[in-house]
Amino acid sequence: MCAQMSDLVFESEPRVIGHGFKFTEGPLWHPNGFLLFTDIPANTVYRWEPGGQTLAYLKPSGNANGLTWDKQGNLLACEHGGRRISRMGANRQMATVADSYGGKKLNSPNDIVCHSSGRIYFTDPPYGIDPDPGEQGCNGVYCADTDGTVHRLFDDFGRPNGMALSPDESLLYTNDTVNRNIRVCDVNADGSVSNDRVFVDMNVAAEGNPDGMKVDVDGNIYCTGGGGIWVIDAQGNHLGTIPVPHQPTNLAFGNIDMMTLYITARPVICAIQLRVPGVSPF
Image (tube, rainbow, N blue to C red):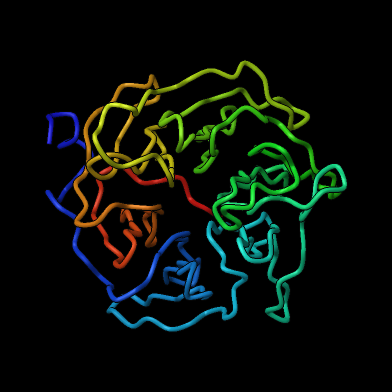
């Protein structure tokens, strides 16, 4: 690792804390002290307890991918199978938040972030319905407003995937798996976005595409990509890459101090200790 990376990471390599899964995604730290993550083909959200025990948390899950919390502490899920954004209620049943735009069914929502205003931003590539292109005619980026209205923000991504908000929520980062880059735009007071631009080009590695993405309290972006987890500062400089034993799909900060980075890497779950805490998901 480069000198800048040594300022961020305690350990030289992540440690494997769980294995034997099909295709893991959507890691999310629970405020009660455990990790949630999805296994898309297994149609399950799992719960990993520190110490190594893994149990089913939600099954069936609608082939859920990305997870996050809303501002009331309810679980939000991007369902590939259900082709919707869903919210877990007090009865542990998942209810629809958004499943269409313009009277047409969404493709297969993939990743999600929730703004402090309660607005929900999400990506909608076709991974869950391939080779069906879907009814939308594009692979869009959307905002679900607090009144349930869904707005399309972008229709020009190849396949939009991971999302993250800057620590002050003034910027929205969205990566594009096909074009292998991260774009950033300004978040306006009404939830709309402006000044869209390419933040960093990741099309430099032989293998590995941008997928999951998170931000720490200093504004550094952690994004899956070629070679592992890319760490990129707030100015778009690639500080270095955290190697992972399998191609990573997503990541999340966890533990009380938010200084453990949990990584989903297809058949395994990994963890690494950091020096800088991540932005809390709740």
